[in-house]
Length: 575
Image (cartoon, rainbow, N blue to C red; front, top):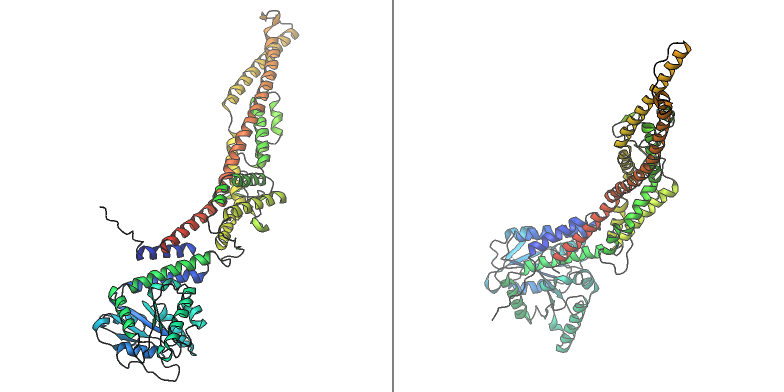
C-alpha cells in the first residue's frame, strides 16, 4: 500500500524572497506605503529568524479597564504589574519570562526593558508581555501598542463584557489582522461579573463579531483573573503554543500573506499613477492586448511612422533617382551631360548615403529639423536630422500620436489601474526619440538604393565604343572632305554594300547610341520600379523595428514586469 504524503507548501524563506521580488517589481508603480510595508515585513522577518526561536513572545493587549494587568499577574503568579482604578495603569510594556535564558537579544529587539523572571514549569520558553491600553488617551501608549502588535509571535486580546464590541478594537486591529488567525487568541475577562446565561450570550456574540472580522476559528475563552475561572484552559492553550515552537514562523507567514494582500489591493486601486483608471473586475495581464502589439496595432504604428517620415516621398525619389543616374551612366554621350544639370532626387533629400557639406558626427549641420509630436500633443524636441525629408505635417503627427495611444490602450486592456497607467506610460516613454531614430533609419536604409547595377558599366562601355565609332567615321569623312577640297588624290574607300564605311560608322554609331540609350532608359524605368518596391519594404521594416524598439518593447517589458509581479505575489501568498 502506498503511503500518501501531504504536499507541503512553499517555505517561509521562499515566500519572503517572493515578497521582496514583488515589492521590487512594484517600485514606482504602486503606492510607496504598500511597497515599503512589504519591505518592512521582509526585514522584520529576517531579524526575528536570527533571534531565539526557542522562545514564544505572547502579548496581552486590550482596552482600558479590560483587566490585562490582572490577567498578567494571575498567569505569572506574582504581582508584577500595578493594578488600580486610575487609568491608564500600564504606561510601558513589561515582560514576564518563563526560563528566559537566551531571550535577552530578542527582548532588546522588542525594546522591552522591564523584565521579570516568572520561573520555569509548564510554560517554559514563554515571554508574556503586558501592553499599554490600545485606546489610551495618551498617544505614546497607542503607538507602543501598535509597534509591538507588529512584532510579537502570539496576540492575546483581552476584552471585557462591556467593551468586547468596541469598534476601535475590531476595525483597527482584528479586521486588518484577519490573516493572523493562527496566532490570535481572544479572552473574555471579568466573566465573574455576569450570570452564566449572559456569559454564553457574550461568547456567542463575540464569536459572531470575530467571524465578521474574518477571524473564523480563533479561540475565544471565558476567564476571570480575579476568581481564576478559565485560567487553566488559557494556561493550557499557551503551553501548547509554546511547546510547538511554531508561533514565530506562523506569525511571519501571516505577515507575508498580509503584505502580499496589501500589494494586490494597491495594484487594483486607482491611486497608483496619474491617469490610472480602474476597470471593474480587471485582474488579468491583458493578453489579448499584448497579442495585438505585433499584429494590426504594430502595423498601424509602422504605417503612421512611415507617413510621418516621408517614406512615400523617399520611395518616389528612389525610383526617379535610379532613372536619373541610369541616364547619366548609360545615356548617349552626346546628350547625357545635359542630365547633369538636373538635380538628383535622392541627393536633394540627403538619403543617397553621402554626407553633405557641413556634416558632423551625430548629425548634419544645416539639415532640416525633423519633428514628430509625442502623445498628448506635447511636441518632440527638435533634432538635427540626417535627411532633408520635409517635416511631418500636423495630420501625420496626430496619426503617430493616435497609433502610440492605441498600442498603450490595447496592451493595458484588462490590467489594474496603476499597472494599466504604467503600460500606457511605457508606450510613450521614448516617443521623444522617435523622430531622430526614424530619420536615421530612413537615411541608413535608403543609402542602399544608390548602388549602381553592374549592367550600367557594360552599357556605358558600349556607348563609348559606339561613340568612338561615330567619331572615327566623322573624322574619316572629314579627312576625305579635306583631301577633296585640296584636290588631292582620293585613297581607296571601302564600302558596306553601296555605303562607304565612314558613313556607316558615323550614322550607324549615332543611331546605335540613341537606340542603346532608349533601351537603357526602358530598363532603368523598370529597374527603378523594382528598386522602389524593395526600398519601400526595407524602409517599412526598418521603421517597424524602430517602432518595436521604442514603443512595443517598452510596453512588452512592462507587461512582463506585471506578469512577474503577479507570479511573485502568488508565491508569496502560497497560492
